[in-house]
Image (cartoon, rainbow, N blue to C red; front, top):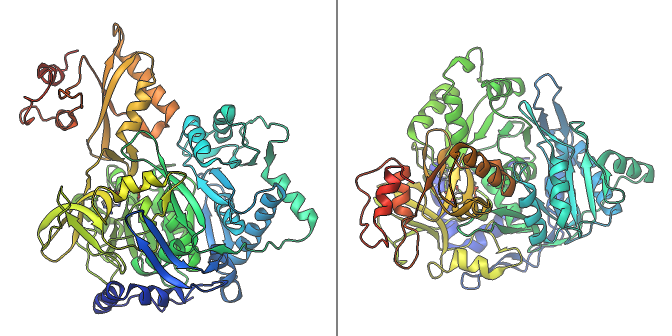
Length: 637
Ligand code: WTA
């Protein structure tokens, strides 16, 4: 594959950007010509941010898997599509060519068909990072079934909530997942989740860890046995369902400032074009390069930049099952050398964590195959940026700092590797099609440079979310009602003298812990489930490795005989309700919370105390009981 729309110089970037703003429809129509359509569009874009209604390539029909698989077969059928690197380095890695991946996707799509999965059905996927996960996702897309991947760190309760919200009748999972030294018993978690979900008809289970599982008659099926049945049927072909441009491709749940995660909906055509266009341009992917994104497919980064972006571009994408520190903190670098990785895309939290091991894990690592580095998920501090640049990129690899969100579908603000300049800790410039604007609290545009404000978008781009599943009003309220006619990102941002953007972090009650989004309200709800808890308030505080840590203030009823035991109990409750990723790093028991007379918790004060600030807490006179603040500061209960 070559990419005629790959931007090759700074001047060209400026030209292309200008066209994308002045003639967006002509611009995207031209890009869309490079994809495989069953039928072309009648209208490139129809939109308003009021409802909101966003339609790209209306009237077109397509199947994204034909773009990710079939169209590569003739010329690149033997190119490696996926390299699978297992958790345990002594286990053999696996390569799947485009031909093989195509075959296996069709085969599993036939399994799904045999089990009555059809277009529009929702399928929840809860798996480890193994090739079958990619196959499951693509097989759903092949049939037009809507996949909703849930990260393996979420609890049974979280799965059950998502199953109910999506009304998903089908599940694909594994017996277990290898994660460093541990085995996560995925099927057992699914069984717990299904106690109150009797609408689930089928659970297909991949055997990976040989973890003992109980298989319920009729409901639970082994992946390999179902594949055998398909083999016996003899016909390996599975037609790609003809999808409308705006049919749902997937739902991905993400946290917001309310207690309940929302199902972000992405549709077929716009998302495909966006994931591909941004992948090709930001990473400057060249034919036959090996690309390694360390994210999990359970997050949006894995959807767009392990699967759909690279595969639609005919790239070789590496899927890693394990963790950066197993068997030791040199694992990423071993993988880079072993598979001669050219492009590495990871999260600042991973960089900081590996930094903390010093340079020893880098000894005897070559890393000379690397050409481009990337980061995503949270602001990268300058120290980590320079460490990455010096020790991993050897000061010869451009680093792309990519800002985007689950809701944006793909990268929005980033330098283009080696094409537009990088600036440490800045995401830099908007990609073509992205029209950022900074506004103040009241929604007035902040013009000029050297300014900061809340980051919004004033024009749609193909990859943006279309709705939140089953609740369009919630989508409108969350993203389109804060400021009229703007999409509000929830992030604060500054723009430097040259027009570069630097994301400063969330301005709402969403935490970013190790690059994962967690709503404070969600964590509070979970803590409050503990029967000894009267009330709680959760805030973020700066954490050297995770970026942000979770700090919980908890009012406990009755006597606190054994605070340590209670802390453990609360951690367990949070793990059970949300998952281990949402466990507070610190729990402070308090007798009261700083509230205004109207009963609102003053989080600003709690945040300052969590940060270790004791003097400048700002105005506390509006508090119902100002003494509470002193007690909290002194750690008094
Ligand atoms: C933050 C992850 C600074 C931001 C793709 C955003 C970043 C949230 C960056 C979305 C970056 C992501 N610099 N902050 N390069 N990338 N963020 O939905 O606060 O998991 O709103 O998507 O992560 O997180 P999400």
